[in-house]
Structure formats: structure tokens, C-alpha cells
Image (tube, rainbow, N blue to C red; front, side):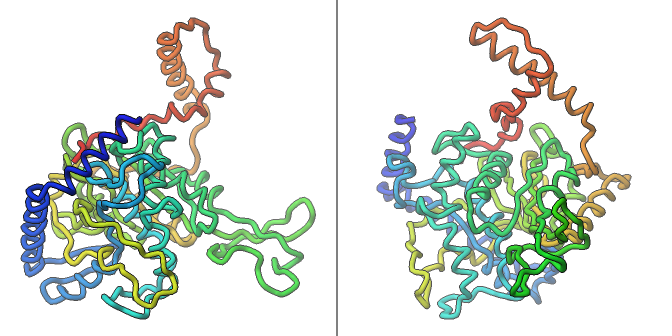
Length: 439
């Protein structure tokens, strides 16, 4: 670990200090930017989460819409991660930044008014915007900072400074949300290409108890502000009426859609998912690069690129009328053919209400009926306990047999012991998703 920290500190100093490297990176960034500007003058329709932009007539509106999204890139000069770790995430933090962008989009949808747009040098940024941005500051105390994500990755088997895959960043987001005291949503990571309705309803259903009518003496509901009421009342053992509320859901679905290359039979449904109103994008990329995809145009994906190293910016003054937040907004997005997409990726959806979750499930079930495309994932009411238990017992036996062999232990494992071992985090391997190379 000490070697890794030392290596990244030296690498950061070389990157920041060598003028040739800086000029080369600036030239490359400039070429990419100028190339992307010309793309948006073409006649094309862009689809983003239930919206359609017809270019070139909607060009300015589309670019303003994109610039309103929070954009997280490599940074340099922040405080050392873990006290002695790297002070820049250049070269290893691209997937972490993409995870931040998906998470920021989720918080934006839950916190901002639908038509809100970011304006440069605005003195009227809403307090909700400041609060969201504050959660991603590059400091240890921010809940979703690069520091917290990198260090939480250790629990997923990733050392600080090691590259993440889509599944790893999904699991880290899930873990971090549990430590967010002000969290306004629940996170569910659907593994094995399967969304289980019962699991999600149990996660998102919040019961509020109060005498009759589910109100307290002051006449107001006792549930948290961001829980949405759904149809259904039950009576608990004490005789109090309980109204069921829905806590907004961030659903992340890690997928593997091919071996070394993505299978074209998935293209149609990938584009459909990006067009759904609940979509908060895709974290994935192409070999050597991780991107945050949020829309599509014909057979190309629209994305925000984290591969620009910017200096650390202190945005800690929440009372300031003018935030130093220009570098958190991108003027022009990128565009990439679907055929270039790496097969390892993760879909993201936010469901504010139970109805929106049910609608998402219905649309996903229509994947099964498509004769020309393979479904991306499956939606089931509940997991079949017998088959799942048998499968997990076999996988645990296989894993434990190899592990004990390496440790020189020869004792046999019964099924009950295997199921107990199933809670071991090390069994939830992410390696099948770790395909993208380090940039």
C-alpha cells in the first residue's frame, strides 16, 4: 500500500511538473473540444431521459441542458487521500468520476425543479444545488468525494489508486449511501442481470406509525420529507394505522453484454433504456476510457468525459452568492459509436414513486417479447429460493474448497456452513466486470 501511495505521488508530480506533458494534454483536450463542437451542427435527433432535441434548431437548448449537468473530472492538488495517499486521481479515477456523475444526476432529479438550468456567474443558485455540489467536494468530509469513494473501494477489494470497474463503483455507491445521514433515496444493485421486485419493495417501503390517519398531534406526517405516499395501509400489532410510503430508488444494474466486444443484439434495448424518463445514464466506456453516457443519437451514445485534469477548487462557502463552480459544468459533450462500447457497463434508473418503478418493470418485461433483440436484464417478482440456495451452496463450496486448499485446511463443508459463508464479501467477485484498462 505504501508503495502504491508513493508511486502515485511521484507520478502526479511528474504529470503536473513536466511542461511537455501539460502541453500535450492541453493540445489533445483542445482538439477533442473543437472536434465535438462541429458535431452538434449536424441534422440529428438526440434522445435523453424522455426528452428529444432536434438539432441544429435545438442546439443551444441542448448544450445549455448538458451544461446544467454536474461534470466531474480528474483533479489535482486536493488533500492526500487517507492522509498519505495520492493528491490527484489522474490515470485511475475516471470510473469513480463517472459514478459521481450518475449519483449527482440522481440527486439533481430528486432535489431540483424539472426546468432548472445552470447559468454561469449566477447569483441565484438554489440552495438545493449548493447542497448537492457540496456532497462531491474533493475533501474527506464530503459524503461522495473522491476520498470517500476511493477508500470505500478498499471494502470491495480495491486499493486506493486502483482502477474501478462498473460493478465496483455501483457497490461503493450503495455502501456510501448507508453512511449518508441525509440520504433521500435507497440504492439497490441488481446482480446476475436480475431485478427482484420483492427485494426492492422491501427496501423502499417506509412505514409511518401514528394514531389513526397517520398524523401526529400537529397534524403533519411523521415520515421524512422525501418519502412519497403510495396506496396501502396496514394495521400493526399495537393497533396503530400504518401508511406505507415509498423512498425514492436508485437502481443500478451491472451488465456484461459480450466477451471482448459488445454484442450488437443489445443496441436497441440500450437506446430504449436511455430514452426512459427514469434513466440516470450508463457508466461504462471503451477500452482505456470510462465515460458517463446519458443519451443517444441514431447509433451513437452521448457522454460526459472525465479525462481532463483540473486543479482542486474550494467550494466550501455555502453562503457565498457566487460559487466557483464553472469547472463542474461541461460546455460540449462527446459522441461515440455504440460499436465502440465496452461490454462491461452499469445502467442507472431513479424511481421517485412506486408507480414509476412498476412502469419501469413493465417496460423491461417487454424486452422478453422482442424478436430482434436480446433482453438486457430480467424482472422477477421473487427469487426462487431452492435454485438460488443450491447455486450459492455450490459456488461457496467451490470457492471455499480452493481457499482452504491454499491455506492448508482439508475439512469438509456442509450446506448450512456454506450458506453462512455466503455473507462473506469476498464471494461477491467483481472481476467479471473489470474489463476496461487503466487510462
